[in-house]
Image (cartoon, rainbow, N blue to C red; front, side, top):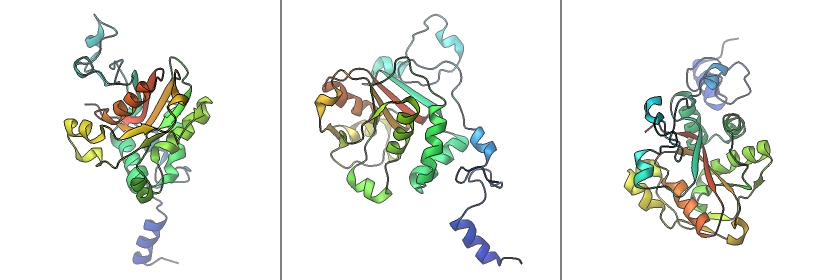
Amino acid sequence: MQIHPIFQHILEFLIPSSCAYCRSPVNGTGIPRFCGQCWADFARINGPVCPRCGKPFGSPEALIHSPGHECASCRRDPPQYDQALAAGLFEGPLREAIHLYKYRPLSALGRPLATWMAGQVAFDAKPDIVMPVPLHRKRLRSRGFNQALLLAHGISKKFDLTLCYDNLVRIRPTRPQVELTGAERTANVKGAFSLLRPTEVKSRGILLIDDVLTTGATMSECSRVLKEAGSGSVVALTLARTAE
């Protein structure tokens, strides 16, 4: 029996069977809205990167004479975190997955994205605490979940780390960073975060989790709050980062 095109369209909207990126059949991958090939094609970061912010350098020659060389941005205005790591580049199927996860929003992508993320990273020193970048309560009510918290939960399980999700808080609403320029992003998040229990982070190594790093303004501001409370090293980990 054939399904009327109108009903087929409604069914596809409610229970999509095609890949969100290439539109081919999903074919039972177990991953919402993605075929196995597109999931395998997530853009990984290859080649030399800035040891501070993780920004890819243009060529390996950039580090020949100075292996620990930081990028111009980090030398000019050092971020508050000690190191930024990203599982992949914010492009192609990974970008589409993050957009679906965050803006549709499709919370079911949280677990497979966290699993993929955990498989791409390694730590020089094991952190003590995993903390997600918090949402303001108004944004949380609107979205229904904190995308950074679902990722942080997966990372904490994979590496057997303590998850703390209710200490670092966003104390005022901010505009979405995606709408702003670099300088505006820094001003937008300045003073937006606080710790409810500062003593819990004292001398502890923190792994700070978010979905995407662009300018790093949000991660840097959260790290400033943690460092002022006496935390140890702060490593910023994201699903993806932009190449610029």
